[in-house]
Image (cartoon, rainbow, N blue to C red; front, side):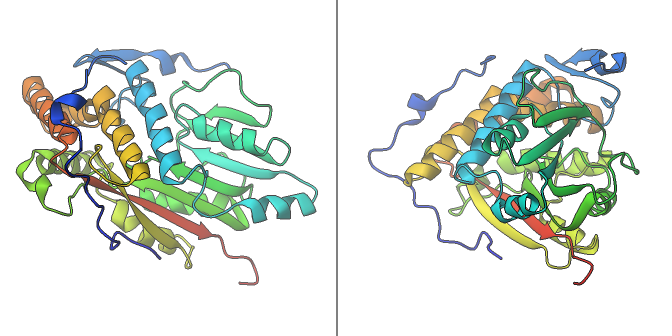
Length: 340
């Protein structure tokens, strides 16, 4: 198991950019049920569908852009791989059995991850991506398909032992009952199958040099945590996922925690690139995506107060003198075989 007790991220000094050089414009950079297109508009964002009361993130074009950037950031963090755990052995085992590897991507979002995996293994993998919002592309590889499904349903429609791999990414804030969710994952996985969760500890931002303490970033994080607990879709749950996974029947589950810096302050080239992308995720609307509905609907804040906090949060994320880091939790587990 690896964790965030790693060497501190080295900060670039001397020739680094000034704050003004990184000022960012925050402007806009199948047959389905009609309820999926019943949108509402508030605070300048679009929300909608039959789950809008509890799903606090918007489903507009700005949110699609944020999800695309978030996918890019995961690619950088995983060095171009779709998983932390190599799946090549699973692909080869399925081939020996004369079949394709079956992969279920829960909360597929814009479908980038599912499409890229299908493109990587065009002859060996079949991918099903599910979401509650129909914003996936129409033209996709023949070995991927998208379905409208709500993984918060207590009973899933997927066949028991029907998948070799289950993948979930950026689901925090969307899952109502993680214990039930992981029990359902266990049920749909074949014996020996892999589940991997890739989640940001969105309320766990920190800095190794305490520069975050003078910013509003902790206040923003606390607001998300308080509102999401009150709503029943916790955003502070990432550190508990390893225990939940083990309790669901995966006793050998492992946890890897990696650092995701925000901003261009790291000296390391790859971390600097990750930081630039991470910062932009908040600039294109991520701060409001997570904060506005929770702060106004759940905590009862005024729109003005919520937007003011989000604006100051973005300024602090963009400040190269504040060295913000988000922990990324990766939970990997194999379902025990009958003989285990």
